[in-house]
Image (cartoon, rainbow, N blue to C red; front, side, top):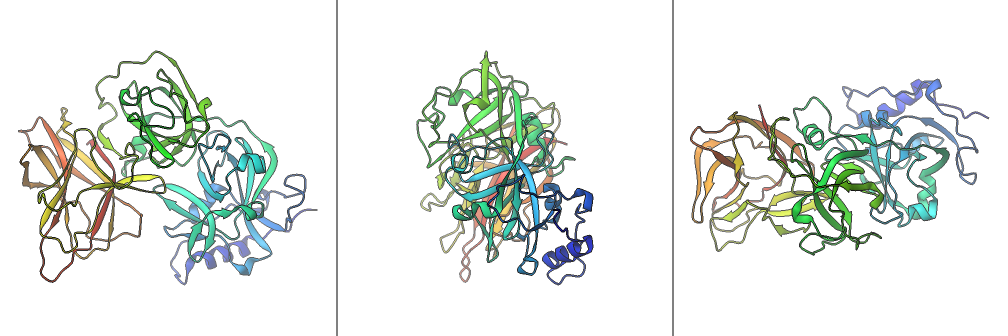
Length: 480
């Protein structure tokens, strides 16, 4: 017997009630909920012991349209008898424990347009629920919520305005495995395409969390000889290990995330060249197991970084694997001009995203804390574009400036106040939410190389305790 479907008018009223919060001017995206779009849910498509009531199905792409920047609750108690349902194909597996307590799904087995990560408090999803790569699952959205963090959509249990992992004992209340299964075809991409999609002025949206494949890839020399579960320096950071991949065409780099508790963590990482498949998670790649790596070709001699794609410099801090670590990237400078005040730029992370952070100045004496990039080569074009992601919290003063820096010696930072880029907004962000800022920069004619310097300047105010804190990420310089 067919399920009774919500009339389109009823569904629209539900969505307006859910999202408007009394704002009559809020535009509600139109979902594809025509009768022909709704799938019939029967006992032949889901587990027989699950109580299936009446559902209205919608796509992952339509769910994306509902998101307005705040945590979205999918349903309310007023719709107890009618619930939204979405579906997708699983692209992750925890069989080897490199990915845990997460299920990544995308809307199509091939050429996907949308992907999300579902957070679950279950340690062995594959073993307990027999859900693996290629399986179609249906997700009951009543009681769940949606949040976008750094271009990745997350779904979890909605409670008191926040998301948490779906409890293991409630797994089958929300996640239904169907009899459908498809071979997932990874989307072939390049590192240049990934980096360009993160450019705020790119004509393309950032890639969603989908399964991708990259060719002509190899591990950077510094990471050669290391285990999957260890950095080249033979150190581990909790469960997360970051390695760096590079391509042989443009010498661009992409971070690879592995888990030190995976079943293959003590295997040597392949040192040759080839293709790699994994889940694209913002500015990094996550493999499911060692079958995702096919490095069987001879290593290439990487050429100098090409500006053919317009990328001059990029840094996402993902190569730093230790939280609260003093940033000491190769060629970079992390300096406090008041040597007796230990306030420096640190690396920190939230939801697997690593960023640079400078804490509030507090009541300390006046000082300047600088984070300065390595030297950047200048090509034929001196007019460039600088973009980055920034988070500003607890703002009561404006302490951050960004400069074009000539050079750094052992005793001096060489820069001119005229080269202040003046791009830091005088606003405040929600916790861990980043805004993207961009500005055109002109490199002085007398420089053959330059650096970008981030200066946190603490002035001693007799009556003011500085509370402003800054986080920066995804620094990108491109040719105009």
